[in-house]
Image 1 (spheres, one colour):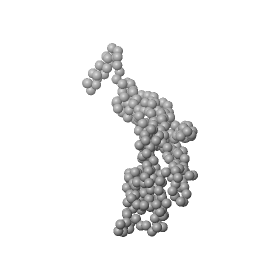
Image 2: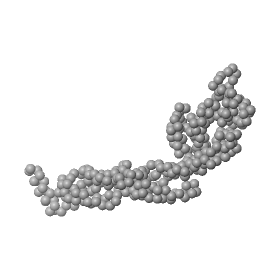
Image 3: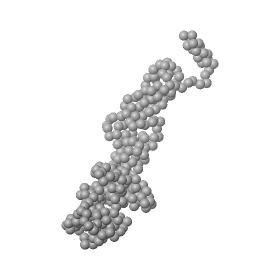
Image 4: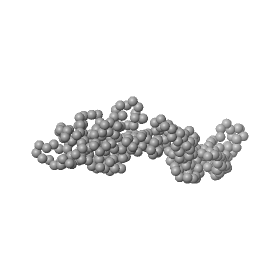
Length: 308
């Protein structure tokens, strides 16, 4: 079996922390997951390599053995009993990085080449070579995408999903954002040999089918007001996400004037009774198709303004 650099597979340094390894694994697993790359053999192969690397490096004991013995880390106990020290360089002795050229049949292992390591084969049910029996392995994480419109994201609700042939019912909290990923624990692939199930990661794709622009928890909207209301002041009804509200317009309001309606924005994710704000921008509409009388009155107003 050829040496596989698990650190290179996950694109992390040999000094990477457990958190860094976990983060790198999740990122790559989502990228190469078979559900997102149907009929892509290269992606499938890469996905298996990533899972193998994670199973070794995420386990402190296995990682320690791998760092010391390389591709033959599974036989660390046999090497230790035989008194082999890979860091000790004697005349004519191979280093740990040159194991592939040696004859280690005395340790009971088959070191012939294969697409993936013996450890990976044991993960997926092939005959294991460890004398200590089969280990438990965590199931694969699943990834899914859920389409919502903005009005659905405004309220907490339940939805049924079909995942890997099973129907599950999930609660979607109000305020979920476009592109947000949530984890449903235990709803991924089944674990091996009694190991825990993987998790389900759902990415939300939210379509804005409203007249509002959303930025985080705040909403933005343009509202037209007539010329006379803008000049003299008055009241207008404006739309919010939960109905119309009446607001006062000050006299001499200009186009582009912004008004904040506190608490009339979008719900804050997982924060009961907390909302963002709604920002209204006024657009003053200039009157058209004036009657002769209106033109005369505007002309009179112009004269008054010019003589002041």
